[in-house]
Image 1 (cartoon, rainbow, N blue to C red):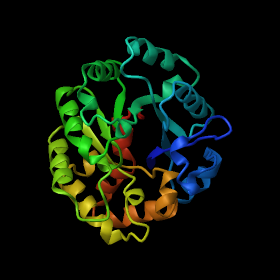
Image 2: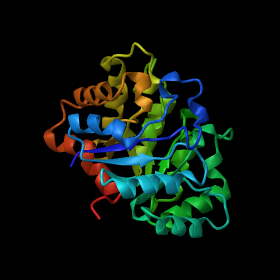
Image 3: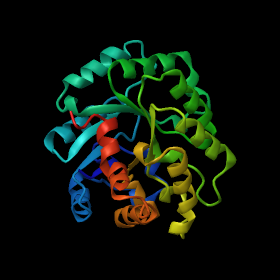
Length: 278
């Protein structure tokens, strides 16, 4: 089964997406109907739908989308990790329409001014609740926040962490020592998986496959294909050329892997980490 482990949908008539304001290609509504032909063209069988804004109303809406369409095998939603009743809130979400598809939680840590936000005691308590609820935690961080992400994953070995967009490195220059070091540290932690996603959105508009190659090679060396998963980051990938370019460039970058390893990256790792086989 081929899985796209990271994409979004939103309806601007229901809720604004303020972060898209300076990004004209994204300043409209996007639905599964828009995505479906692209998935079909590339033989994608299932997807993971991921939250975009930190508001409590969005996650039930995404779960309803999943309930109505078997294409969405799982949803990564949002809850306020710092709320005292976070465990009860996670249980409530499991009980709403589509709640069985809730596989993970994410927060826009990249927007937090404190680079050590993940180390706050109230946040750690929330992460423990995610673990106790048998859910995955998707890490959306920028390079300065990677040390805190490493420490969080190290201190909560029973929680499955997924690093979105490979930690959002700067793809206009060679991999930085700090990013490379963080990938080595994460690679030493068996509870961490990394999404091979979002790199083209972090790259210059005239990016080439060769510009991406050092980052992918570093991930293969430090994380390995058995802990990497492909995600398109659609529709955000429109900023880097679109769905076709994103998946085709990823396949080209992984062309030297054996067939079994490519199956891992393009589906099996996501199915195992997010529990889709259940």
